[in-house]
Length: 283
Image 1 (cartoon, helix red, strand yellow):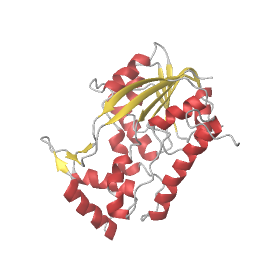
Image 2 (cartoon, one colour):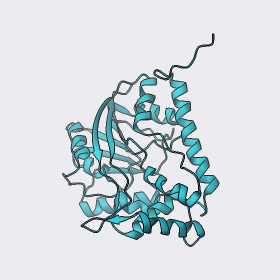
Image 3 (cartoon, one colour):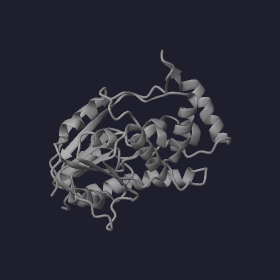
């Protein structure tokens, strides 16, 4: 009899192939239904939302990350974005190396550095992995990066090669764009192909032979400051252009679904989601 694959203990190749298949299905669906011509910088319209006060103390995940920083260490933040975690970690570490391919994100990061007086951050305009970018740090860190990376194996291998002491990943139990799936049937007439996230990442790591430590936190349900912010975010995740028929459907759905709380922030009724801080030893 042929040997059946063991779903409880997949091999590394099988796990990486399953991850890649989900990413391809998500991407191919978006390309098939996409209305606007893709811009050079997908994240530019929402880059400002990836900035936060680096001295905030009301975020349990960040407070836990601070405990992972040892005196005099260098940290590598792959996909640093607008500095939501990068600048806070730079205040704890000797040096923060930020790798970020989005020009819009880098602009937000540089502005925040200037306004906050943070000078120990080195920024690299690059995708990852990049064989020409030879970086070594004590800790390699990713936050909400990896969900949509099809060939994740080489990405993680290069991350591990760049870390002397520890690798750290912050991932949600569902990819950040998942709340937009609420609107997909009403706008596109089909359900969204969902990206892999924290549960699949942990399966993948075990298949790769990595034993991870996981600390779980709860991320509150997403809310939006204004209707325009909600609309901009959903347009981006639904790949629709302003003014078209699908945009009209989106407007109607937002009017029916969105509610506001006492502070005026809008909610679409999506649930809170577990968020994990995953650590493992490189090598």
